[in-house]
Length: 79
Image (cartoon, rainbow, N blue to C red; front, side, top):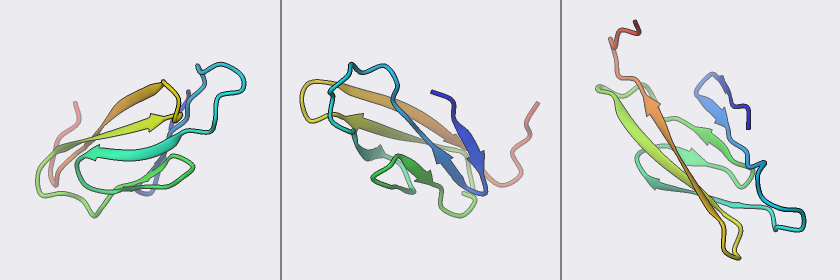
């Protein structure tokens, strides 16, 4: 789904599961930050170096989706 980034948060969503699937349970597999029950990822303060966060959503039945989020460190140039 479309993802929006604002002030250290990123709203994630699942759109490809079939009708009747339970709402996903969100979790962080690896990396810093927090994720809410609705899939809103909150980054910690700006890291000293770039790092990757892996998040996942599961429906409690048989579906799992994962995504990586890149947090850019202090002074990282975006070209």
